Picture 1 (tube, rainbow, N blue to C red):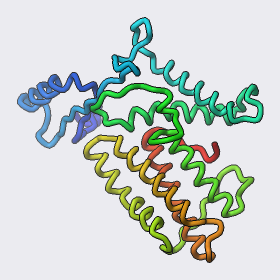
Picture 2 (cartoon, one colour; picture 1 turned 180 degrees about the horizontal axis):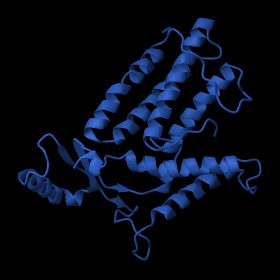
Picture 3 (cartoon, rainbow, N blue to C red; picture 1 turned 135 degrees about the vertical axis):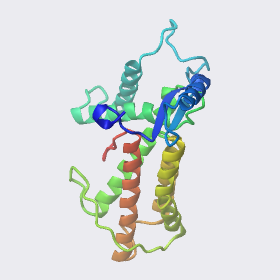
Picture 4 (cartoon, helix red, strand yellow; picture 1 turned 60 degrees about the vertical axis):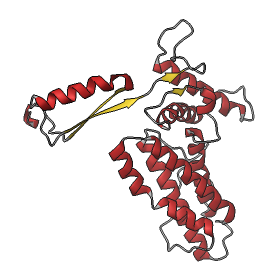
Length: 265
């Protein structure tokens, strides 16, 4: 079908359903090719995913056995994230401001998305608010805090403590003075290969694994290499550049996963 008739002339068509339909799609694709309905140049691909299970290992459902609504899952995740933010306020009984309510929404919904995408899509996994909202490990809150932390480092090093949005410094020549800088750089330059691999194989969990590795490499770099107290202005500018690239990498990949970042948490 031509574009003028509603067709898109796609050369790759993806069907994303549960793994139980794999045989069905194998037969549909074979029949379509044999009938000449699909050109040889067009790739038809089934992208299977596993089941979401409750913590008891059974199919995820309400206590009455009904299907759990996505809206209810997201609302509960946002509520838990909001309660966590309140617990760290001077007056936990106060209502969240609009800004903090937006943060809770970002963290809560992002946690559910990230938990789903960080698993091998063909594997079953157990749904757990505790794990997905944890600040430790390969989770959305961990990555959001990692990004906000880098924003804080840059704010402090460039006298932007009171600014609403970070103004990222211009790129400077990179000076390697410690092995942790070299390891961070080696990790950052893998980004194009990671994106190409995910586009080809359709396993978004590899983006999450790379994100987690990037945040860990950055933490090792920051533990060993002071930004604000660097020995020379040139070294400080170099380390600020590494902060900028690390933050940009985290933001890009989180956005690809459908999760916005926040500069303060």
